[in-house]
Image 1 (cartoon, protein in one colour):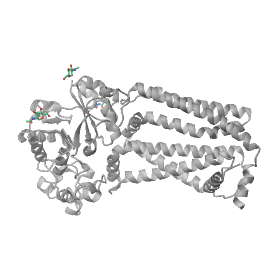
Image 2 (cartoon, protein in one colour):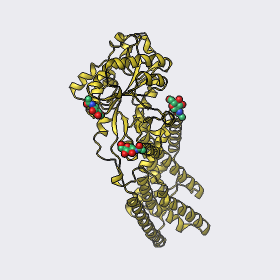
Image 3 (cartoon, rainbow, N blue to C red):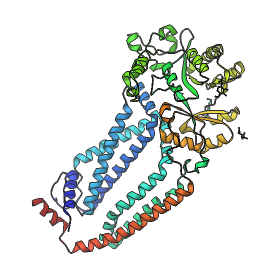
Image 4 (tube, helix red, strand yellow):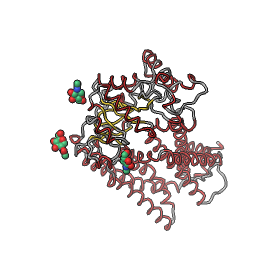
Length: 528
Ligand SMILES: *[C@@H]1O[C@H](CO)[C@@H](O)[C@H](O)[C@H]1NC(C)=O
Ligand SMILES: *[C@@H]1O[C@H](CO)[C@@H](O)[C@H](O)[C@H]1NC(C)=O
Ligand SMILES: *[C@@H]1O[C@H](CO)[C@@H](O)[C@H](O)[C@H]1NC(C)=O
C-alpha cells in the first residue's frame, strides 16, 4: 500500500514535472529513460558550473574589472551570475528529485515544454560564460583544479552519500528488469560505485599532512593597500593594510606629464575612469594616457567617492561614518608619498610599472624617485623586468623579484612572485626547501589561502588582509593515515547499507505485488 505522503509527493512531482495532474497516456520505456537522462545531465552540468563559480569567486574583482572595461559600466556582474547559476542549479536538482520519485513509483515522465526551454537557456547561459572565460581569462581554469584539491576528500564523501541514497532507485529497476537489462544495470552500477569508492587513491592535496609538518603561516601583502576597507591605491588604503600587519604594500606606478610617479592601476583605455571622478571633473575630454595630465591636475581628482558609490566588494557597510568621511576625501597619491610612509613603518614596497611602451624612461624616473626618498634599498622589491640589469647597477640594494620560475633560475634569484594558478603546489614546497621566497597573487578566499599555507608559500598578495589575518590555521589539515582510515570506513559502511537496501527493495516489491496497482491507488486519491 502506498502511504498518503507518497501519493501527495507523486501528485506534486507529476504536476511540476509535466504540468499534468492526472495520469496520462502511455509512454514507452525509452522515452522515460531519455527524460531521466536529460534531467540528470542538466543537474550535473548546473552543479559543475556552480562549482566553477565558487572557484572563480577568488578572482571576482578581475571578472568585474574586465567587464567594466568591455561594457563601460560598473556593476557587480559576478554576483549576478552566481545568483542566476544558483537558481538554475536548484531548479534542475528539484526536477531531478521529482523525476526519481516518479521513476520509483513506475510513473510516466513527460517533461513539460517549459522545462525544455529553461534547459536550453541554461545550456546557452553556461556555454556563453564558459567561452567568455576561455577567451578573456583562460588562467581561471587551473583555479578549478586547485579548488578540487581543496575539496576532493569531502566531495568523495558526498558522492558516496549520494550513491547510497540513490541506490534504492537502481535496485528497484534492477528487480523489475529482465535478465539482459539486469546485467546492464548491474554492470553500470558496479562500475560507477567502484570509481566513487576508489577515487581517493588519486587524491593529492597539500593539506594531507601531519599537523607538525604544517609550514609557518604565509605573510600578507596588501594588494593596492586594503581595497576592501578603503579606496584602492590611496594612502587610506595603505594605512588600513598596516592594521593587518602586512609586510609589504603592493601598488601600480605610472608617470604624469611632468614625470612624477603616481599610484594608479588602470591604464590606457580605462585610465582613471573606474576609480576617480575624471568624467565629472574634465567633462568632454577623454584621457587614455598617464602623460596627458600633470601631477597637479591629477591631484584635483577625487579617488574615494567611486569606492563608496560602486562598493566593489560589498564591504562599504563595514566602514564607520568617520572612515567613510576619510575615504570621501582621498586623492591620488604620489609614489614618493608612499615611499615615505613605507620608510616610516619599515614596510616593503612592490609595484608594477603600468605603461610598457615607456618603461625605459619610467624606470629611470622611478628609480631616481626611490633613491631620493631615502627609503632603505632593501625595502624595495623590484619587479619590472625590462630594465632589470640597469636597475641592479644603479640600486644594488633592491631585492630582485622574478615573475616566473624560468626567469628566477636563469638569474639565480631568491624571490619569486607569480599568480597562484601558474605554479604547482609541489613546486612551491620545492622552492621553499631551497630557501627561495615565494609570493602568490591575488589570494582572497580562505580555501585558497589554506591550500597555499599547507604548500608552504612565504607570502600572498591579498585584497582581504582583514579576513586572512584572523585565520589561525588552514581550514583543514588531515594526516594521510587518518584520511585513509576514514575513507575506507565510509566506503565499507556505504557498501553495507546498500546491501541492506538491495534486500529491502526486493522484499518490498514482492509485498506490493500482492496489493493494488499504484495507478489505481493514485486515481483513487485524486478523485477522492
Ligand atoms: C625592519 O624590519 C626588519 C624585518 O622585517 C627588521 O629586521 C629590521 O630590524 C627593521 N628595521 C627597523 C629600523 O626597525
Ligand atoms: C618569464 O619572464 C620573463 C621576464 O618577464 C619573460 O621574458 C619570459 O617570457 C617569461 N617566461 C615564461 C615561460 O613565461
Ligand atoms: C635554508 O635556510 C636555513 C636557515 O636559514 C638553513 O639551515 C638551510 O641550510 C638553508 N637551505 C638551503 C638549501 O640553502
